[in-house]
Image (cartoon, rainbow, N blue to C red; front, top):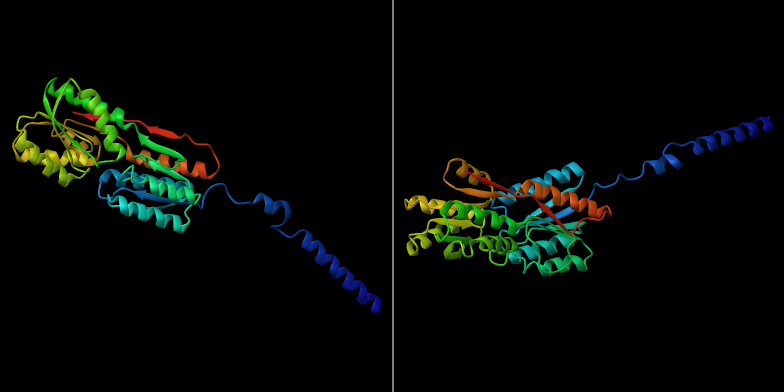
Length: 307
């Protein structure tokens, strides 16, 4: 009897050992099911302002691409305040995000925030506007100088050489304002008479006020180049209220601006394709996080939209 019991115990032990060796989810099967490449990345995105349709579209493009790639984008709005942007970036660093994308309010001021991310070993990508300091993995933007030149050439062709024009400038210190102004003046020099040049901070309301002031002191201008469409649309309101016939060229190709061009109220705008910029920024971020080499500067094509 004892021999039979012993045999039964030995048989049970052998069966248990065999089951253990063949247990699902072990050995090679577990190795094969290792974590998927990509996904689960958290990307912080400090954006200059969401009170501008261009940057809303840029943000939406980034979020859509992140969802497609299985990543998460945490968007924070600097509200066109360089100090708030610095604080926002510090918050993202404290949250331990995997990478930070920054659309700077001020290219000079943002350098310290980029350096803080560098010190925390968090990679940084700049979007649409560059940073003047710190280490950046990649910069995704349109060629703003080329865009400014496109706008200048269009304005010259419409108002003629020697015409008196005004230039509405973007946020002082931002790379977009500097570069678009540079491109425009490359063409305007010797061909146009820029009688007024004033910042309206990329803002529609300020564009209206600034244009009203310019018209009072320079009633004979025949053309305006604004560094973005929001200022151009504000300037257009002032021009129409004054009953003037002045050629206006903007930059960004926002929905309102394109509609104004189609209606013949604006002469043209340079399309910068913000949705594509946002998509490319996230694609580049994920590639970088997965250890792939990415280009230091990635240009996004421009298109001139005109009557």
